[in-house]
Image 1: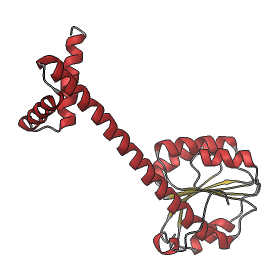
Image 2: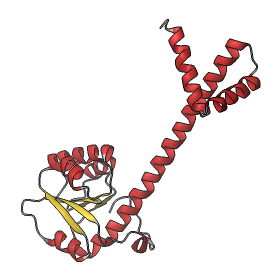
Image 3: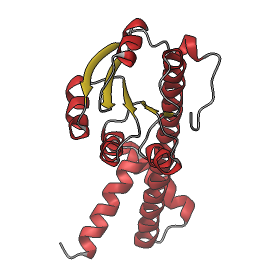
Image 4: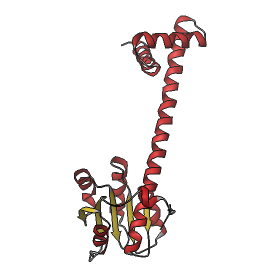
Length: 211
């Protein structure tokens, strides 16, 4: 298994009971082994695919909690469609593969795969792998959210600084006075500093463009 560590508390926090699973089988002769184990664990297998081009549509329609790929080695098409899914409708993805090709594993992780398990499928490994994959996905989702929040805050600060600069240039104010006036204008209009700053910048850009 690549890039995963087992959390002893994962069993309680991420029970597979009731999970909706979309299964992608890329084998010449698919077996019922994985499906039987998922059912035994209390999961609901909402769909079984053998064509990667259907991944996006099935995810949108069936809304699975997790996607599992059972393959000798996941195809490039499957990984490309998983990457699109990860960008548009991210959810935990587990790959069970018979082969430990390093380049395929790296492409899978880059495509958003949460857990990549090699050396074939063993029923006893399914539940802990699912638990770790879900925990890792949730951790990465939290990190992405925090990163986006930090980017938004930085962009807001830049807009406020630019709006403050506009007031300083227009009215000959120092930085502290311009900021105080910006805050008062925002309060008087029932706007946040960022909203008012965006309006001031838009108005200034319109004047500069001669509109």
